[in-house]
Length: 190
Image (cartoon, rainbow, N blue to C red; front, side, top):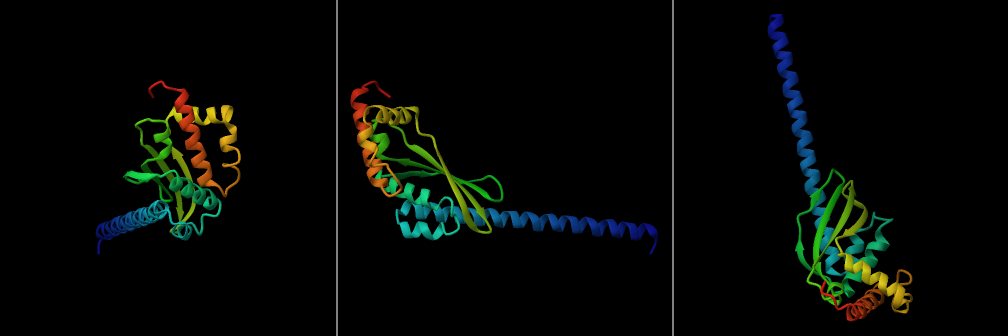
């Protein structure tokens, strides 16, 4: 075999090797994204089932987030969150999945505004386990104004009800009541 043929064969072999490694890596990334999407869907399904045990089972490795997410689940249940739209999940990278969920709830109803909030769950998934969850929302400015109004004018409504981590139902119901009172004195159309 000539030097030219050996070199060509070597280059051809290296090229095939590089391409096959890339395909394996691409397949692994694709599988990881699919698994993470499935895990995210399992979380969202458990959260909006309003079944604490179901949610706890998907949060077994989310030590730092578990209590906040369980509290938020109960808050959402007692605030009558109804899923209006489950938006497409956003795969940010190999461990971060954003899950935007648009809901109708009693809080916006109390403010008498025609607005459905999109809550986004930021799931960190490592080795097929949810390790942490953060949340964000697109609550309108009036939501924050109403919360501030309660603190300044009716703190007794939420001080006891929203104290600690054991009272999410009482807290959301007190907040809704405060929002209704805020709305009654703020008759400007929002």
